[in-house]
Image (cartoon, rainbow, N blue to C red; front, side, top):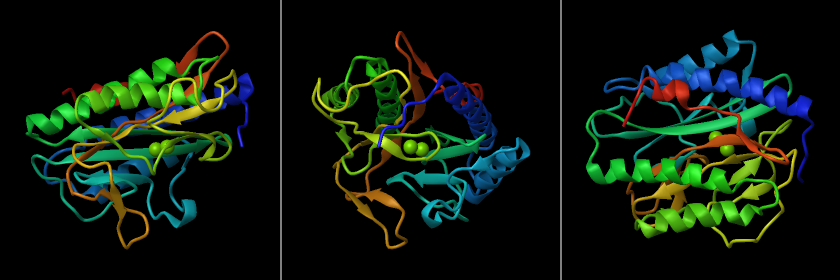
Length: 257
Ligand code: MG
Ligand code: MG
């Protein structure tokens, strides 16, 4: 079900997204070799709670943490753990904030130390594809236009698009309609209209697009164990413009690649 937001509701999501953006920035400062991923989770949770908000993911369908931490071949929904980051890893940090009754959701994949050029290129292409998707997320377009733009761009570079996991509407619930696939046909799917708030989140693989779920019931990894990248923004659609509510600027102040 699609819930259209009033401008007052979008304002609440904007404020939630601001806390989220700054929480990501705190995490970014601590991404380096030797850091345990559980430490990153602690930093994010403390920052969010210190700002009067609640981590959206903690307890969501039983999820145990504030961050989804997905390293290398893990696509999404990995658990923070005692694993220590090592040189050459990539790490996706996905976080949600619940504030004043509204959720925001955003993710970023970081290189740790010296990452191989082919994997770095995957990260850049996935990040670029997010912005190409956002460009299509305008009033009057359809949801399929977003996925089409992402898919066309990354497949031209030889990468593959995960099908089973998609972006989503969000607001009072972390996941609302519509589903926002990262693949699709131009002009297909629900109409994008003022008041829609959606999370766009390409999950792009270096090898096969096929995924498997680990026995923990959450962790999704690539079937061939090749790396996967994931970037996400929450955006609000207005009649005459689209606003990216979440931000990676506090991340990119700390890390540039
Ligand atoms: Mg997310
Ligand atoms: Mg999401």
